[in-house]
Image (cartoon, rainbow, N blue to C red; front, side, top):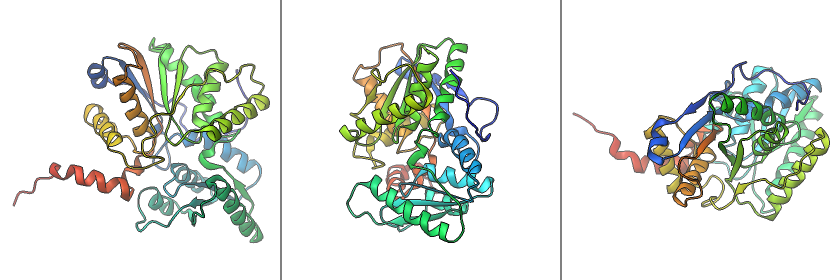
Length: 341
């Protein structure tokens, strides 16, 4: 099934690599691969570029001069939005909820380098999504009074337009898996704002792929999140005419650890394992947490011996450099330094 909608070409014509992980496979007695969506071009790479191909096209169709988006203070999506806005000559404002950090580091630093403005609204204790919506509307009204034409992108680019990025990716991944004869693998992906997970879910269902999909919640996933995901599915189903339901969605919710983007020893250990076994860096918020869950699931015998597994690397490496994560890494890694006088 193909959905025809305009997009700009932010990715090359070649698919992102699907790499076999021999060291981990031997160590864990499973056949493990990793889909390298961290290697997309622009702004340090990451999964949000697939969504932004469609979102940026829609912004340009509407003759926008400025893009407004939102997220946490260290939003990966904000960084990549700033990058593509710069490439196409648009201004960018990133709206965040929280406190101003005492360091301008990681994604926040990169946002500034890329020319974005960052607006931080102090958290007043109400629903974060509601605060973001209100703050973006205030910013939108202010810039439009100055003559700008603003295009608003929701958190993570996760709407019916951004969804199409990973709807496309599903066919790309299925083709790669069939070429390697691993087309009955289970795909593991971090699930946050749900656009990546839902795009893959619908894309795989639409082509009747034999790949299985398992989302790993990286933030608390209660009744409101389940309701949001079902409503998101219903929206795209009606809009794009899907003939399947969402009854077999699979999201593991028991590996959130301390909460969204909170430092965690188990996640850091998973990051060390991937780095020291395969030379691949993971972030502590998304793919690192997903990989930590994957390792736990193996330990809990939820993933059978010999099972073929594909890990989705969605990027986000600057998160290692946020103060709360970096200081803990520094404390644990001091012994790596030897000084010779």
